[in-house]
Image 1 (cartoon, rainbow, N blue to C red):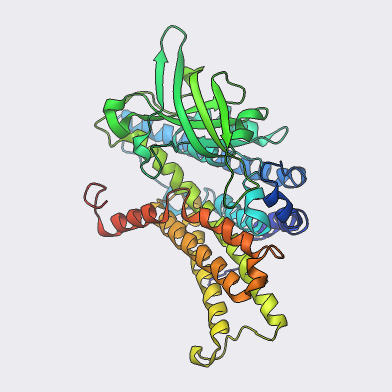
Image 2 (cartoon, rainbow, N blue to C red):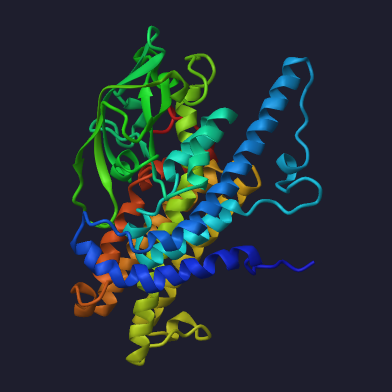
Length: 441
């Protein structure tokens, strides 16, 4: 049976309206929103919300099915039986002969297309976003239903995740925000500060939004003491103290949040409240599992930006008689033609890694190595491709007459957030060489 690289019809159907919004709504607003950083890009929300809501529903149902199977397996094991993984968990396909889920593949295609339109505007798209990834990684079935169902119905809603702190960037295990349990009121009390929270303002100030906050319940326990908490919009004690002015993705909402005796219900702690020092730092591993799911999304966004820059450069130079040559050997190409081919090749390589990382998620398989590889490659590729676009186009690329200089500024964040390129390179090296974090820093 031949290998088929054509997109599944269901993904193509979902992408058609997304591409239309990216081209006809987002791209024309790019320059204005870049120059008016804290304006709300609301025109496209109603257009893209139906597709995002459909995606949220698919992700929720898949997460609930996984949680129920895990609970059943745990119950079986507690009764002295060894559960056997069969069907969808074993081979990545749905039971009863159905095809495997395409939820993550659909998502990265959607994100790539939206980022081609404008990455900053895409980041303001109403969705559970990083919050949803964190909830999927560690929540109980009841919490999945309670917190994620809201994103599948009603008006558009935003989610965000708050992890980074002034003293804890790449070293997420060094977070200082605390969560103290008040037994009298059956509440957790959060105190601390978070910075660079994407969509933090939207999630905390818009109706029915939420932020997943990572805090420590026991500083002496180290990483094992890290726990995620859901802080819902309008919760007293959670306040936006700053919205960042940034190099790129300027249309996006990037906030600093202070938690001052912020009280949330005990049930808003995701997963198990117990600190289990001897069980592999489950709190920290929960945080890292979140990134395994979201790094392919960041990679897809990077590739969307890179594709925008590459296509514009290619088409502009073609009008001047400089065209792509695929049949000639490299030594017969001009320097500019060789650069164009390398730009395209770098983006294709990053995209293939991203597809693999997302496909493994859909198949319920471990993707820690692949997600970090995709993130590293896409971050490097988009940074180089957009800089090369500015270089090849000269004054036209450097001025604000076109969007090329903006794409170069938008690109760099993809090499930074969700784990810097350096951190993800370390993760890749540890996974391949079999080193621990202590052995390879």
